[in-house]
Length: 249
Image (tube, rainbow, N blue to C red; front, side, top):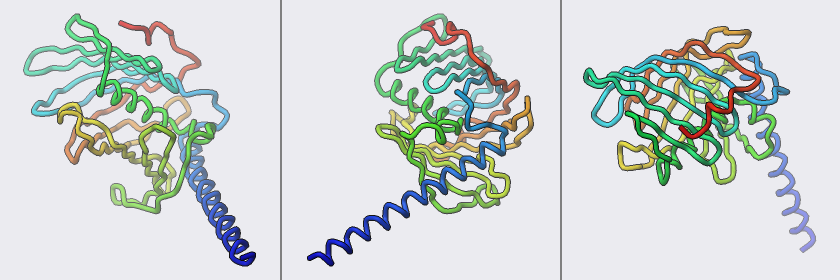
């Protein structure tokens, strides 16, 4: 009996050691990515704004658009989009502040609720993960390695990010440069009756802006179909943003 107990103890210790080593390996991959973009582990938070121009495809329609975005980690987010739908100009605003969210279009505003709120908050959480900083500063995040995969013809190291009561986000980092090149997360698609599908984000054409490297092209493939193809510009980091940006419209 003593031998069996000691053997079980040895197996448990070995298993814990392997998991701990794997978590360290995963954090090392993220740390390399942060170094590659010029971020620091002692940064207090991620507060950023940017613009983009591209094409959005959803359901049976396709719309060219321009957008202004703001993100203040961990849970404040805003985007204002202007698009051209069949010759008709459409303006659309979404604001998230903590667990509350609102949308505004064509002069009408309303609070976002139900499954749409769930999905909107998941998107904000994804931004939090993609900022990378919390992955090395917040112990509530659990990181594990998931081997290597090919992304755009190049080898990428894969890291799975989990957190209690949050969706799993899988990150792909270019083996040579260390840069984040892809992400995956299960989402609920509004255009398919909130069906759960996979969302793939591709981050390309990194350039140095304000002392940091940022991706200037982004593609989103949802459920195997193109959803967003955009070029980003005017990326800026901030000490703080006006609180009014995230107030109810």
